Image (cartoon, rainbow, N blue to C red; front, side, top):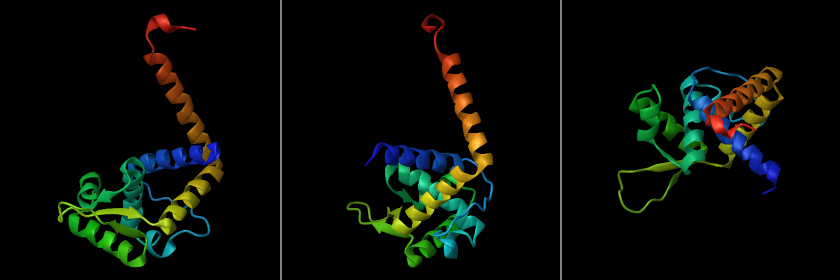
Length: 152
């Protein structure tokens, strides 16, 4: 993968982490989004953020993990995951061992929708300003965290 592709993957991971840590419904969607599922339901849209965060961290997620980090009930999360499975946006991983543990991961259409979403955010001037501010704040915190003898 080219360096720019790797950098964009890192951005998508950071965006998944950022999105899964807040509860704001955004409508910055471009063509090719998974509208039929993720734009019709607030719950599905919010859960997609958590799904993508887990996917970029460990490659899959379980219903129990989604219930633990979200504010939704187990029946709500389960029905959302099963709906996404039926529509082909998620796939179940075949795991040997514990049959009670069911791991899921997004399929290519869902990953493409996430890339489109991240591209739409990058094209949004307001988001770009916020991203630059966040980068400046992170740099300041890193400088503040350095021991006093490490000055340049």
